[in-house]
Length: 600
Image (tube, rainbow, N blue to C red):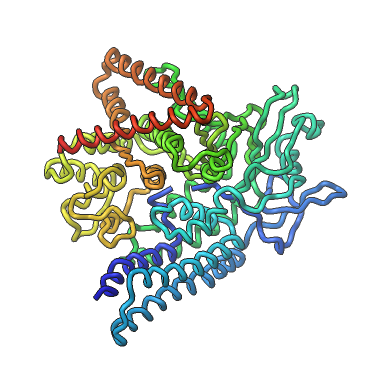
């Protein structure tokens, strides 16, 4: 009997987990790191002009010319898909086989296993499966690396054996040779009579990061180009466009095949269609530079046109040093969030200390503000959020990089999203029928489609699951966990393509809050932004709004000054002060939750 209960709890979750591995997704409800890839060395090479760079290359030392192999053919793409499935299918089969074996032992032989014994069996399977999956992804790279990045960032969802095995893909993929990078930069940026040294007085051969679309090097501009100024040079990998787009095409076909599989929590075909469109823009660095400036203007200016302190730091492109495949921008001195824990340990900071908790709240606040403002105010936002694109800078501030994937949603979607945030924030309780009906109708207005036999509370439960991580008990008796057979996500028949990437941003913040063990409600934090957006649309009372804006700006400025002041204190004093601040923040959070509970 005990083993039967264990199977009911563990077995169902494991089978759902396997379905997610089969589709290689999670992209609809999350959050990622731009990983950049080196194409297989065995590809044949041909000479191509710089304007048709489409593939990985070798540099000939004698002539310093770059040889580019052709784009992946359909046969090459099919070979990549076959290689992946030759490993993925046996991994899935091994899980099903082990599950069937344990059921037989229970049903026919009457053997009962304790929960600890069952956990041990699954742990062994996880170690084996994670190792094989990491190996094939390391071999193929491409879009599969992005999948690895997402899985590794969801410690709250996937087994730790998988998140740990795939964590190396977040910001460290096999790098291109420095000589190759310099050759591409020369072809893309330099004028006919210029040498590399005329533009860059320093160039670090060792890349800062190497991912699936490009890799980044630190350099210093010459005086001719406004130096000495530290910059980061983002150089696109040749051939990567055809490789990644081919991988997405494969995954689209796979997800279309499994589209009606009941065990899957979402329609992943819709997800991959949206990702295919957004990924296509990631190969144009001119468009990325424009996006950087546009988002920077949004977060440094309030809705009244006044300058404000941005919640985080982001690089700016260097005018005149941008092409489709090379982007020169400000250098941010820090480490990716994916390596922040080990950096804390190196500096003698306990990752579970009050200082770390204060930083966690600062991180969540910064991301919440940036994505809230860009999504609700302009509808134009960073669409590739993951721990590799978030940096912890030397001064303790947060940095956001890689604007290759951005998304513009419609004005109508923005307005409806704003109404959803207000309805969630204004609800009297989690089970009040009037509130649930209002929230559910707004969710359906966004374009969410549910199963015909779903519960009446399903739409509202989906909205709470997606935008309010502080809710413990979802309406309708639904569970919070994505892999639970009773998750409200299971009721989704389809999700609007326009909002797939909004969901990905919200899942990033949700995943981080779970990892940091800090209850966090996006709807509660986005509601003031939503009210401001709707107030200005329908009742533009400038005096009231301007006072509120000034008060909000002053509050943020004061918080920033306190944080930076604490960071400069000596270690022993800093720890004690951080402990006091953390207790104050926890107390405020508890009081807010208590007020909400009393309200309900």
